[in-house]
Length: 425
Image (tube, rainbow, N blue to C red; front, side, top):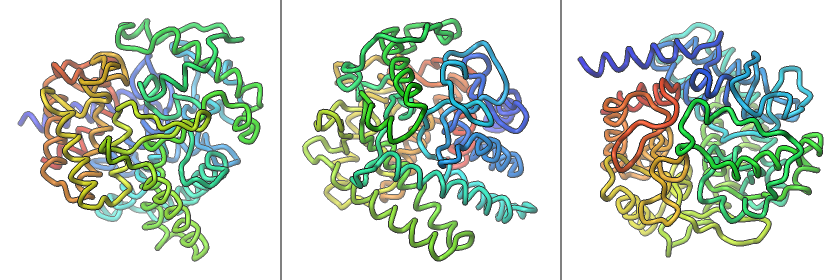
């Protein structure tokens, strides 16, 4: 009975955050359409309304740039409750958008929604999937061209916001090189909605906006941005999600792609898997990102080191080491996997990406564990995630040491995660 009530509550949150075919993450704090949020939300919708799931992805693609990039925010309608808004980004697009991107969960979501459509007999699914497949393929081409111009098999982020893990300890050293000076007046709105102790610090925001200033002055041209970027990290979390989404597009390409598309996707996939394989570090029992400016490995322990599970098939030694490391991170936690471990000096259990647990990250990690045959650990992570939501509500994230709900409430992707993970219990 409780499960049914919670499912109904999750449906109600998605309805409440619907703004006409697209979903805001939560009211006021995030009043626009966010890229990877919407991809997860579409998978949540697919559990009960496939037509609406397709519409979520279609509305996101309305913001896709001609060069293929899917921006991290699409400003479908004005709002004064969020900074930075369209005026700060200064992009010139038919719909106002930000000028950077976010993890490309889109391809994963498209396969998920398409398979739900097949299972439910949804009318018109083939036409809708075909159009979205082509949009996804254009996005993947952009990723490899704009963010891996040297062919490393690793895609780079030029702004911490692109990673989705804005203030992660993984970026501390690289971000410290970014000046705090800006040409933009910073008017933070987030701390008016959520306690400042749960959000990035003011100094982080100054550096974030400095980067926006730099890229705006480049007219958002990818080649100029790459040359000017004071922050440039080959991110294993981003690369792994792109590799997994590429594999999902390869599956869809058997029906919706040409022979050339299939060959192109297979080549992309090999390149990304080869790149990820080189980032495994046995001494750390996880994968590590690469600072492309200093040339140094980023060894700060964060959840990103486990995300390659969604794309890579580990050998027995890697699987044993990585699962043991996840167990170490879970030890003593009320709910895990934390975004940074308790033993890290950077650990802050209530501050955004410096320790709290995120339902969608656990969703990815559990999927990856299951793909690598670690079924019991995957199920355990899913169960504690569902229990945390049932105990604390549909919060943005959770304190791993207490299970307390943090950040925004009535959060769309947490509702989506509950709908998907709750069915796996």
